[in-house]
Image 1 (cartoon, one colour):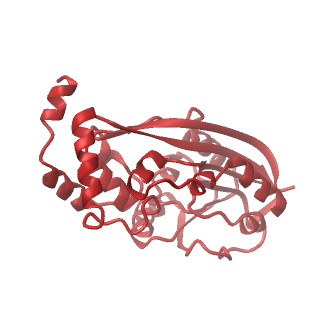
Image 2 (image 1 turned 90 degrees about the horizontal axis):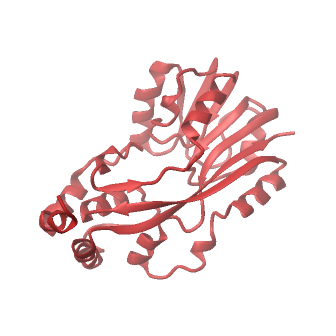
Length: 259
């Protein structure tokens, strides 16, 4: 089917809106978006590298694990393996997925202090943490331990976010990798490795937009369909005209060491 035919085949606006409102948004499995949106992956293969590290670790902590989907891709876990999560639907999903694998899931509010003793872990990991408490991450690591994580970088998905909220020049500067490294070093960490990338996201219908804004709730805080119906209708018209809405994600891979 060519692009014109695909656009003509889109269901009506209200039908797509209802679809995006009804789908389950717990966990971090985005497979529902297949055929509705695509995201280019970072080149370094975080899940593969994470699995390799877990296989040679004695005690690990995965912070803000979401529904545990990324962590669960590892084939081998250390003798002591713990994950934290704050959102109740994700806690339930991660527990179901990870407990049979021997990983303890702890419901934690993502605020200091982490509920663990000093030096409890030799590997702390996280994929896309919403908040980062460097002093706490440093505290729960053993001397010589590693923090290994993939973080969201500056201005991620801001083409979409600013479509709804308007220009956000100051917010675009947040989450910069240089600022995060400086904060980590102030907490006592040593930088071992830093890699950055910017990748392309393509969105093909308005149902995918509603789904994303319901799931990634910090993109457009307080998002509801009713509050943003006019902008959703504008974006739906743009999607029907152009066939795609393009935005970009920033990611950085961090490896930090506790001396």
